[in-house]
Length: 167
Image (cartoon, rainbow, N blue to C red; front, side):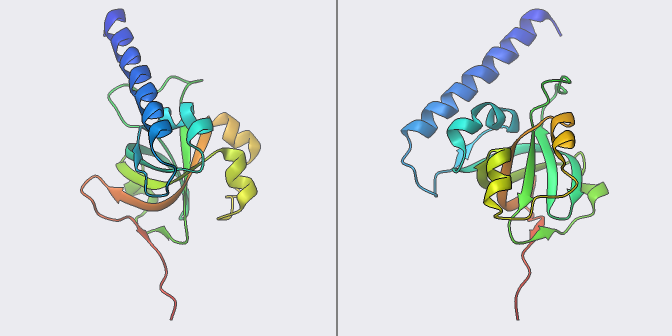
């Protein structure tokens, strides 16, 4: 890949993030807003989008922490650069994953939920913060945003979470 091609790809990503932010600022602040963006764009815009309903339509699962938490990064042909991985932790709201971790890692999924900063997710306690995600692990794995997820779907639309039904 040439330097010019990389420059065009990076410029396109910056333009797309700016367009997403502009659309989010113009949209009414309702829970129904569906702001679609890549995980790396969410990380860049988390200070503006925190607390809003978002969709990550092309998120690659990097790691499953436990049945209620996993890490994603932007899916695409270019792999991330260490120091700029921009990963997002997804916490399943009120349910858990119904797929084995080995099957999920490396898959592209669609995540829908509420965007949160790492601090905001820990403070609100909407769901328990995974004890595996210590401050050192968050820093080392470059986790820079969180999503309180109401839905996680495979690329073909199959729901990958289940909320327990109370009797």
